[in-house]
Length: 246
Ligand SMILES: C[S@@+](CC[C@H](N)C(=O)[O-])C[C@H]1O[C@@H](n2cnc3c(N)ncnc32)[C@H](O)[C@@H]1O
Image 1: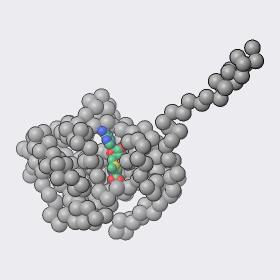
Image 2 (image 1 turned 135 degrees about the horizontal axis):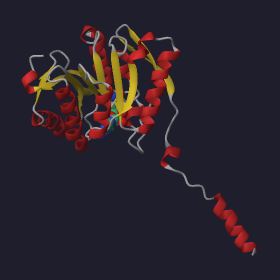
Image 3 (image 1 turned 180 degrees about the vertical axis):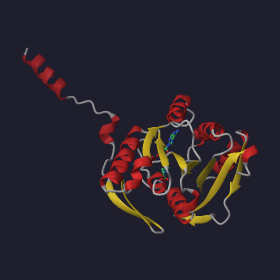
Image 4 (image 1 turned 60 degrees about the horizontal axis):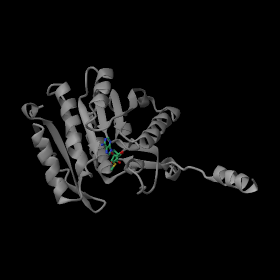
């Protein structure tokens, strides 16, 4: 009887830890400067390795894209933008200073949480541009996710942005399925601005091949090829083939 009671007590002590217990949430306010633009955002200082939490830090592709956008901010004025794989939101939040509307997206719930906190931070710091800033769940290749977003935004988007989102081979065809859908929705009035960071030759080839397989035209933006965090980065402008003059 006493043994049974002890066993019950031992069982009570067994605590089931789900994966969220191991997630690093040591987010710190960090200051980022892109030309004259200064952003204060919550992020981790180094990436987690356990789960798909690449979005908790800022990647070199975002630095490349944000510097380019801050130098070419006229291309954003009055535009509507959707960002894919936003992570903590450093690119989309910069764009909200110039654009009419910015939808930041990611597939990871933990990342969406920090993304929403960074959006709230914009409103609490009195930044008026946060008004057109929202976050949505969007998994590349998931038709329901993208159709729901397009239903909420029936005029579609002028620009799709992606910073450092080509790092996993299996997700590239799905990424381009989603990109093609958004480009087609505006029938040639939309372009995909991708900050690509080269880490493997196989990925360099795959990105271009998948774009072409989806009927897209890829142009390197002259003057953007540069070394960033010891890696080669470049910005591509990707459009529907018949709309490449846009
Ligand atoms: C390397 S991080 C880049 C984050 C941010 N753009 C930057 O440059 O700092 C890649 C981001 O894409 C998101 N992601 C990865 N696979 C995805 C998928 N299949 N669908 C949607 N988002 C995805 C990750 O959650 C992560 O936030």
